[in-house]
Structures are given as C-alpha cells and as structure tokens.
Image 1 (cartoon, rainbow, N blue to C red):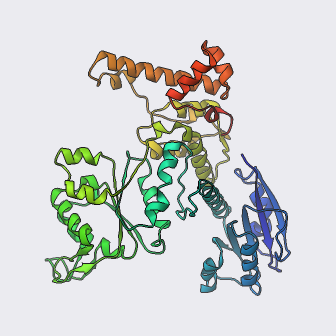
Image 2 (image 1 turned 180 degrees about the vertical axis):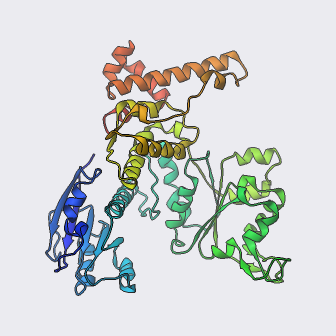
Image 3 (image 1 turned 90 degrees about the horizontal axis):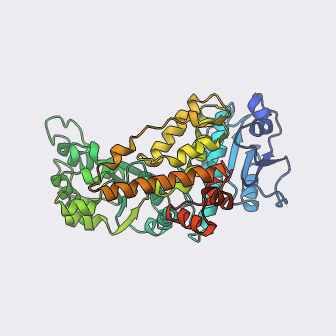
Length: 466
C-alpha cells in the first residue's frame, strides 16, 4: 500500500470539552485502516505550502479567520479534500453550509462519534484516489459520484472512460449488465459528472411498477383525474426536472408502457393524467437492463423503435467472473467499509480466504461479493478474515454441466473450470511467483504464461496485497 499523508490544522484557540476532539490525532492513528498513513499537525496559518504534501486535511477553524484560512488551504493544497471540525461557538448555521462553495468537502460538529470521522476520512481518501486514477488515464474530469467505482481491469476501465463523454450529452444512455454489476453506480457517475449534477437523480425500478400505474407514476395526475385523486400529484418526471431520470430494468416494461415512454422520449413532452395541457420536461434519461435487449426485440418482447431511441450511447458492464483481477480490490474495499461501520478490528483477508473468493463463480457479481464480505466481517472473531469466515453457496458443478447439449461441450467446460481452479490455487500458494508455480505444475514458463493469459489471470492478483 502506498503511504499517504494527513495534515491536521488546528486554528481554534480554545480547547474542546469532548474527548474525541481533544485526542484527534491519537483517535485517527489508532484506527485499523490508517496504519499506512503519515500525520502532521500544525497551528500555523498556511500562507505558504510546506514540504509535507497532504492527501487529506482535517481543519479545526477559528470563527474569526475561517474564510481566509480555508481560502489559503485550498490555494496551497487545492487537490486535497478538506474535512472541517466545528466546535466551541459554531453551530450548523447557513455559514457552515456556505463553506461547501469555498472548498470544504465535509464537516463534523462536536460532539462526534469516532465512526463518523473515520467514515468521512475513508470516503474522501478513496474518492481522491479515484479522481487521481481517473485524471491519469487522460479523462480530465473529476468523478463527482460519491459512491466508488472500484476496479482496474481493462474491461471495466474501458466503460469508465465513456462516462465523461456521455455526461455532457443529453442523448439517452443504455447500461446493460447482469444483476449486481453496478449499473446504478455508473448511472450516478454519469449524472454527477454532468452539468446536471446539482439537480435530482431519480431512480425508477420499472419492474416494480404495475402496468396500470406506470403512466400515473411517471407523469403524475391533476386533482379529480380519477376517483381517488383528491389532490394534484407530481410524477417522477417532474421530480427529476433539470436532472436525470434513471429507468432501471427497462426490459420489464409492458408493451403499452413502452409506447408511452417512447412518446415521451421523442420530444420530452408529457401530459399528467386528467390534464388538458402538455408539459415539456428538461431531463436526461438513462436506462438499464439485465437482459439482452436486442434479443428481446427479435423475440417481439421489446419495441424496436424504443430500443434504437435509448441505445444511442451504451455501456456494457462486465460480470465479476470476467474481471477476477478486481476481486481483491473490491474485497479490500468492502472489508474496510464494513469493519469501520460495525467497529470490527479486521484489517485483511488471509491467502486462504482470498483463494476461496477467486475460485467462486459469483453469479450475483459485485453485489453478492459485498454481501459475503459484510457477513464475514460481522461473524468473524479474528483480525484476519479466514477461509472459514467466508460463507459461499455450494454448487453441484455436475448439475451445471448437464444443461449443455453435448458431451464434448460439457467436457470442455469441465476442463476449463479445472484449469482455472488449478492455476488460481497454485499461484495463490506461491504468491504470484510464475517461475515457482510453473515448476510445480511441470510446465515451461512460457507455456504456463499462455495458460494464464487464456484465463485472464495476472500475477499481481496473487501477491500479498490484501
């Protein structure tokens, strides 16, 4: 892990009456996920940048000099996120919230809980690292989405590179991918990277809307439109005005609902139930599907004209089994998140635990991995997650194989699964050392590397990094 720096600037001349605030440095240093960080504390006014380059700043301001000091901090260390700690005379008044426009990224008011501070630090550091990676890849725009898109595999990064391009267009975007691959996270990333970031992001689960309620939920109604319409109700499109409407599981819409949606997408006009006037909506539309919409069109289950209307821009999110290099990164991310959230002193995953994660097929993708890590964090009694802590479903591989039409296909799948499991196990045992692994396997190094390329396995995944 690369060492990062945290700078604590204390301008408040008064000592605080709360223990957590008085022992701020000790509190942070003792946390389980900040063991690889350096700290520096100062009370000096930051008029000139020091040689200490912070990755995050915790600022305890004095009320009289707050604006000037915050300006100086952002001038000297503009890329470092700033968490302000308000105590002694401060309150959650408008002047605090106005500070977000002056460069403050988050704040706490005394008294505060240890978990509240650590969660803010964790989130901002991860966000800063994501932004840095994002910039280094030449995309130039900050990832304004607060929820992290964790991953470094090429198939994943290829879709991330499209985000800033799509974000500055009001053309509909279609995000496809299996359940649990992070479609809503990508939709939010597009929204928060766009000029609409200050307006609402409204998610709609199309699968949860009964056909007879679709029009009412989307377009709203006026008073007296139907028997129970005792008042005028704004629809979800009106709620999303100026922002983004996210239509999840769009493949579940009925034929009549598809027609109504198509009419809206063609000119952004809609009419609330019972109204005699059309309204125009200023919204961006992002749709998501866990089915192949092209196949749905061919099967006459989805309108072809609607498909081409929403599929101008598209993202295709890879399943987790096709980006296994990201499993250690995702597991470490969820481990850190839930260890802090549940106050558990767990800092890493054992080699056996990592091997178990790498060998699993992950039909539920990232969402399933998150649930597995959460369950392990809560139930584990060890500072290191062991293989026995990781509870995965047991699948009868033979039952999975018999669904294929021929013996040859079943045999090919069984061999492929064996090869991947064998390679994962031997690389884990030798911590990614290809020479040693090839020798144990009785294969030449070049032949062994070709096998790794075939199964998209990389030595870095198995080195001791979790």
